[in-house]
Image (cartoon, rainbow, N blue to C red):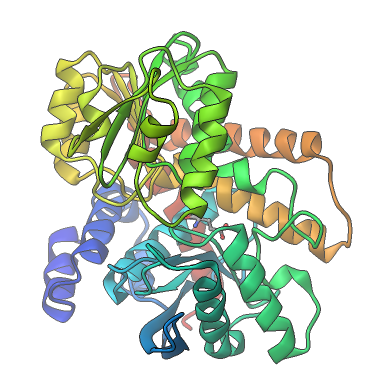
Length: 447
Ligand code: GLU
């Protein structure tokens, strides 16, 4: 297999699908050497099959807004790969959603889910519906209209959606309510990220952020360091950033910045529990503004419009917002300001130039598919609880999550340790995930 040949073919076939092409290129570059040591993979054309989704559902979603006007959006579900289990992955509601974005996310999800050690295939879905400025009733009507089509594609042993950007506990509730009406199935395992009184796992809301910090702590320990006392810059203020801020603070780090599309809030004395709680209020308001935090906590937070979290002096950077949110220029600015570690929590949060810069300038770096896998892993734990009709305590879920993150870190070390003893976490995560999916595909024949 030659990465360049496969990429040339995909670029010609899918022109303009930039996020998808970027995600595929990163994985293929990482695995090329190992892949070519396995002629049986080449014979079964594993890579050619793995880069194509199994299937994509596309559907129209029509709903009525608060002014009585009819609105139309497009909905999608990309079922990417089922080699190691039923399709699993979140739903993203964001105005910029395209098939390319969901294909990149579904592709990444396949390897991420393989890393969790749980039997889950990869999927992603969503819509170009923009939640910004929408009322609660509009969100409900949109979710119901979306489920009118989605319900036929999903099932607890078939395809299990969850949240992602723009989809949290509230949206999962509305989606599940409509699913029950349509399918007349009352198995809560069809969606994860549910409310804790109706089948949701304790700690699922916190899991992505908590897991990211457990992974970061492992990476720092391996490098002879500790998160305690570190200044941490976080982008975003949604569910993932919230969990990351909570756990970083609990572990003794100081979160000195959170950001939004409008700018950055600098918090020189570190984020407080009240500010962390307020992040949830900001998310639920659908205003998509971090300036609200500076208005609520005027003495402690300083808002600067148009700036990113990466302009604030820190030791550890945690991108928690959106793909490609951290550019090569941002990476340089971080390094100049003393940052020595970046753990990507958002999916593909760093641009390729930023990753290259970190890796060649002594900044520890780990990729999203390893760092943020605690979210989907805890979804997997939610499915297990639902299937066995039980509910674990927070302590039990946390212990399992911690164990899974330790194991993901170990897999990265196993496959990513270089001859000079350094660890390439990008290679490690990609090769570990890839080997598992490729082996399963090989064993299941040409399908
Ligand atoms: N959207 C999350 C992710 O990117 C979680 C998916 C899930 O829980 O299924 O991994």
